[in-house]
Length: 526
Image (tube, rainbow, N blue to C red; front, side, top):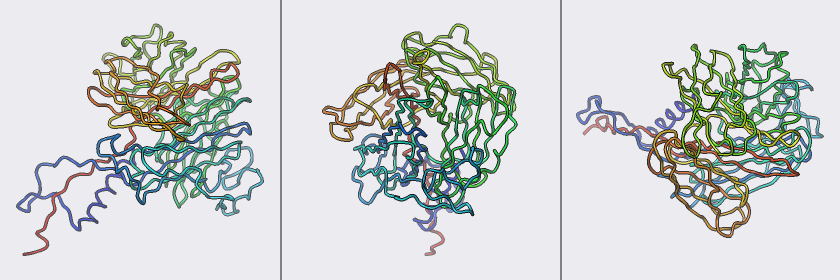
């Protein structure tokens, strides 16, 4: 994404500032002809953004925040936190989106709090104390919030708490149209995000939440694409997200064209935002749809539950070429072509969908998308809408395409019962180490190593800390073999409803590659 290049440039600039003058030069003062392998160093600052949890007064939200210990990944940070910090605080305000039913950007919800100033600035909430404050690597912390007034959170970690910092937001709504378990990994800010799998059907109330972590305002554009291409949008260009604020935008108010399957494209003209889509249906319940992995010709969507009663694939081709996709299911025993759902054609600039019904047939699996035989590798983004249960007992969750775990990934909120871990090796067999942290209120770390055969999905009940009290974190580290994709499912059934949520586990980006440079001392003279 765009941030990668910017971060790399910033890292090089910082190195130059520290060393005085650095350049890639040959020993004789000429230009180097061979590049030296970059050094991988722990990041020193991380940002996370959590969307406002829910609109229901019945909502109960749990936050779990965690940074792995230094031993949990190669090149990790020191185990002592020293002067490091990792805190999530309330956003300055949660504003009405420009297309909400109450007016324009800069006007807060009428919940008894002060409204924003007329010039678009905002007032701070009654308290800006941290909601979540992490003290040391290796020990997760938890926090709780109740009701509809819980705000979006904006946070930063520094020093030894920054590499791999992860925060999970899990909300339970027991009744109403937004009922369900809504789980989401709080995300880093970005400038270009894709969300295939949203909906503006008549029975849906899908919002995209935009949160700005910076001290200056962000200007955001939202594009919507249905099965016939771009949808005519209203008020979707130049959405203002004030500094430190969060704006929820109801998708159905951006266009007059209803559509069952929609791809949402969020880009920024200025600044950066964290974004997530909250999908909610009258019958299906609700959950968060995170952004898909970057557009690519080959994608993996890990962690389809064994008892899924319906699986729907939604894909979008952002490039100039159509995509002819081969669809395969990596199950516990191998990779198969699901009957009646072996392929999907995605036309350029259009959203395509494939109803896969109960494709897992009682065996957990993951979906593999690749170019059809003889077809070019046209880039696509994709996500799954997964249903458990039927009728008024059904519940949905979303699984976006996710990148492999290259060094380390963490799922922060796990319980003694109800957590399931899915590990997928789409190519070669892989060895994976899984570390269960201590609990938020007590317990001892546990470690287990798994072998994931090539072309399969291994679904396991993960290790649980001895003497666990509270929730705990799971850290996944590939040890050898081919690439591994991971997802964690949290099952929290209530009143006969199979409520659940699935979070994919992309790499935590705790390490950054810094190009090696040779110092040129010739400028110093004799």
